[in-house]
Length: 132
Image (cartoon, rainbow, N blue to C red; front, top):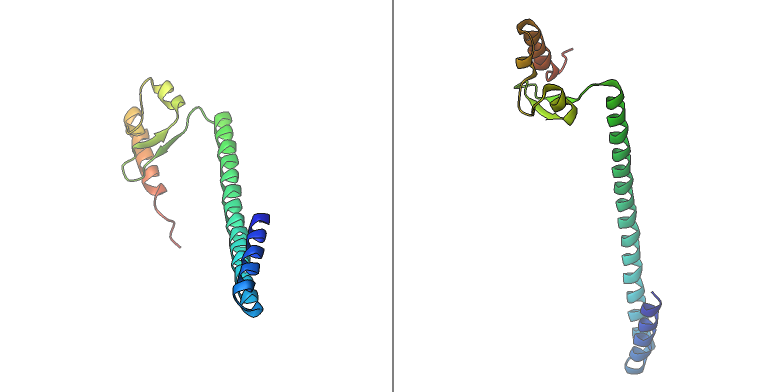
């Protein structure tokens, strides 16, 4: 910023030699206006980037907390697609419990038929919005 100020002062002096003082001051005020606009833009962009960083930090903290809670309460965690009842994501603990990779498989295939049917009905209703 100090170098920019010196450069602008040199340009104003040079413009004063070739042109009138009014033209030199007009040039100087134009440069100052551009610098002010750039600084305002920088401050605005900085605040937006800071807000994005804060949101990402909060999400990481929330995710870590959720994972710790799940680890304390559950033997394993998985995400099941309501349309197909297939496992779309699971942690390594579920794979270790069953002894093989469970991604893409249906949990109901590993249950007794009546429990598997109830599970399918439950998963099918999970994707439906409640009416009323």
